[in-house]
Image 1 (cartoon, one colour):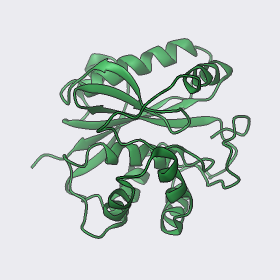
Image 2 (spheres, helix red, strand yellow):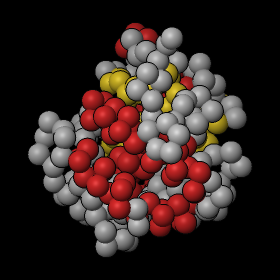
Image 3 (tube, helix red, strand yellow):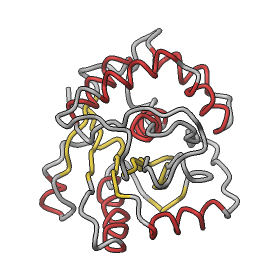
Length: 233
């Protein structure tokens, strides 16, 4: 979360680095089975580079710079009455710099039928505990969870760059739920549908939406895309 675009909560964490190795250790430590799914860098959005990403892709994380243009668009969405669709797992963000963790929770929360979580692990308990909550209740549950705060802090200091809470970038997640591509951003009022999609075309469909964001912000360079893919075998 950016220093100039703060969340309303007083609580702030250190931001997660856009680093698949850091995210893998974080997720595996919280209960995603190591032989089940893994994060990978997406090195570009053209067809050839997308083909290099291990398949099947289960979810896509996108890190982008917060600018006056992206904030304008966010405010437009805040004024819309977004209802959380039945099977979409969505939560709000109330902790500053928690967007990386919330992006990963959005990813895992919408692919629980495709992956295995270790019984009794943090992620297993988190999704069982928050299943019937609304997005703000889930945010409050996360904000008051010391175990997650410690895990996030360890992951945030494990990257290649020195951790600082003064950043101007933001993580969101794209997932395919019931044949639709959803953008999941805890700073917006609800999930945003980007039209029809499928597990086989999720990466390409998300890439098109991401390209649109990049084209609207030609002055910005700080974009990262990470795919969470199912491991074969």
